[in-house]
Length: 142
Image 1 (cartoon, rainbow, N blue to C red):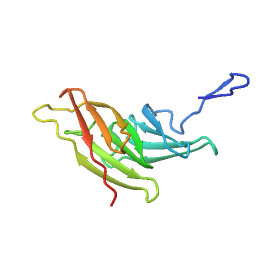
Image 2: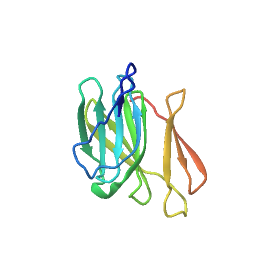
Image 3: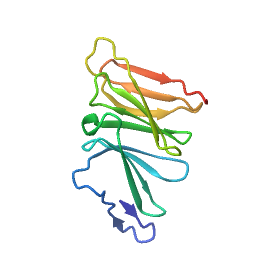
Image 4: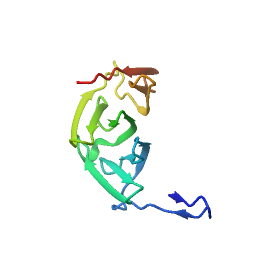
């Protein structure tokens, strides 16, 4: 939704596919809104300046169920909750390249990651609710 601050009128932003289900979103430094489309296994970006919407298929496909998301220094991070163990996915918007890693959850079948946050130092925090752990992902520049 968009809100006109003068009139307080709302405008709904519709995604191209009616089957879409957005779970979480984050905003990058340029004002783009990044979202995970859990129902269709996609990562998406909405540009408020142009009203353009673009989506990319998640590496593990339609059943990957992306859930949590965070943008850290222009890189998009999210998890695939349909994978066992959950996968941590890194997406570089400049190259449109994905990388992914398994997120350890010990003997628990599913890590159940619902939220991610950037730290002040530029790392990533993941809350894994089924193991009652917070994982710090140390992000280094290549």
